[in-house]
Picture 1 (cartoon, rainbow, N blue to C red):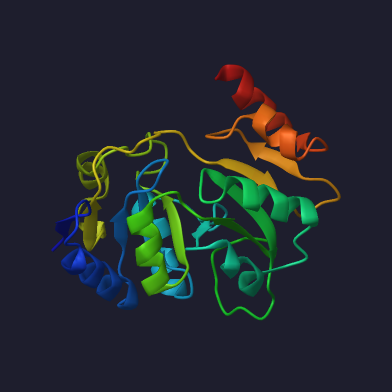
Picture 2: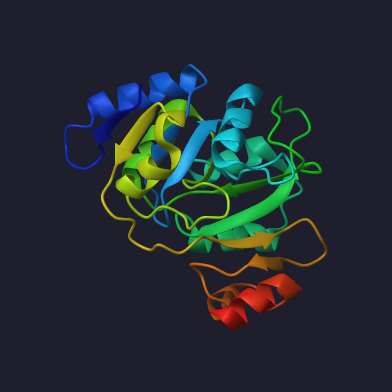
Length: 223
């Protein structure tokens, strides 16, 4: 049976305890971020990640990103991060920037068909970062069924995911409602994969050499 906890205010111990226990058990948690609500699983438990994909109705060809509490976690999870990527992280983390990097080959995780990469983000949500500091990296995707809009409040998330999730953390309405901007750092130049909460002009001020995927161009034109 799913349970819901208030994730706003000063007394959050029950919420942290319940969420951390669920993650340790391989169950799913819905949590607020600075963009939209996310559905989370232990990034190092393959069966939990598969449970996340199943709950959304997604295949392994759409692996979830991973949320981390601080930029310091970057080097323990990735290799060959270029200098421009570190500058982007310094500028936009915590915040709505997801970077795709080469995953550290010593890591024992299975996020799906990643081709040796991992998408990482530090969310601009203090309570969620605190939870991440207690659980470790979490595989997190938007809290919705595949093909439906991302949930921007807890009621929307619960109506879509229902009993597939063990713990719901209610942080009020999402402050942005936009997805994160995704930049790939696995080629010779940084590449905008998805336009989102950080616009292209802001990125180009930091990384003028950034290239734009055709799909990102289409999304940018369509708003």
